[in-house]
Length: 168
Image 1: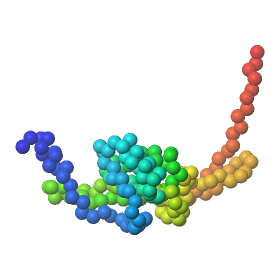
Image 2: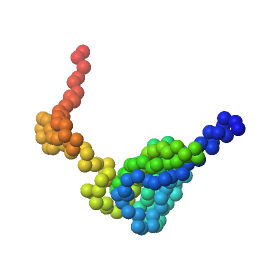
Image 3: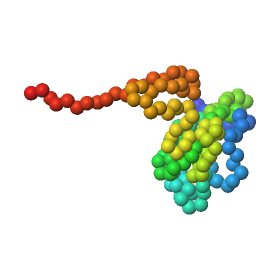
Image 4: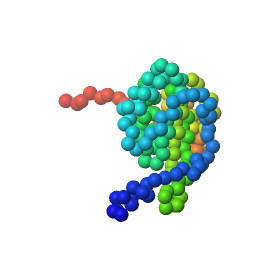
């Protein structure tokens, strides 16, 4: 058996169980876009746009391993065209290959909806991109300060840019 055939055989996987619990239930029928490392982004975006324009109010993106960045890119590209509420779930799956070795593969599920989602849901993002993690600045003249959700004290100063005429 050649080296390449052995590598292909080791890549066969079986998902044992997804770890973690689902934050959002998928009781309604909505398209689930499973992204893989070879998925053409343009093709799935066309399908997702048509689905949201015609029939569906929600869409779910899922990816694992090397396809996580592509999954995020698809979801963010769709958010440019629609005002979508979003909930992001991250986790891992236990996978066993043919040789019996168990590995943990990172996964991501992104739920996007045209309808409002409860803002207290873990991983929620509103259509403007804000989350509970980021502190909104207060209306103060010179400095804004506050505590972000991770406990650090934030201080920002407003900087005024003045235009000066060049000296001749």
